[in-house]
Image 1 (tube, rainbow, N blue to C red):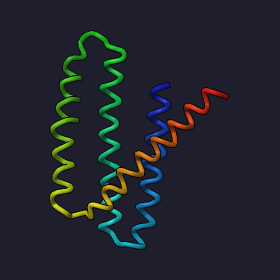
Image 2 (tube, rainbow, N blue to C red):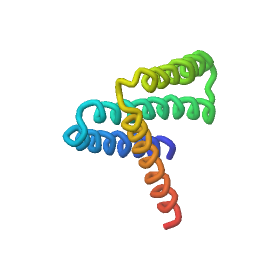
Image 3 (tube, rainbow, N blue to C red):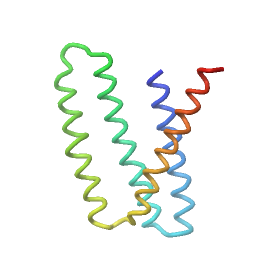
Image 4 (cartoon, helix red, strand yellow):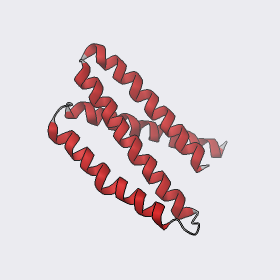
Length: 121
C-alpha cells in the first residue's frame, strides 16, 4: 500500500508541476517556470528520501545501518542546504519555488483523500 500511495503522489505531483510550469513558461517567463520545477523537484527528492527512511524503519532488515546513515546525510544537511541556497541566490522567484512546493503538497492531499475514501467503499 505504501508503495502505491507514494507512486501515485509522485506521478500526480510531478505531472501537475510539469503542466503548470509549462503554462507559466508562456505567461511569466523561464525564471518562474524553472522556479516551479525546482520547487517541485526539491519536494519530490525530499519525499523520496523520507519514504526510503520510513520504509527502512517500518521493515527493518539486518545490515541497513549504512543505508540509514547515507539517506540521513543526503536528506537532512545536503538537501536542506540546497533548498537554502535555492532561496538565498534569488535565481528563481521565491513565489515560483513555493508554487512548486504547493503543487506537490496539493497532489499529496488529493491522493490521501482518494486513498482514504477508497477504503470506505
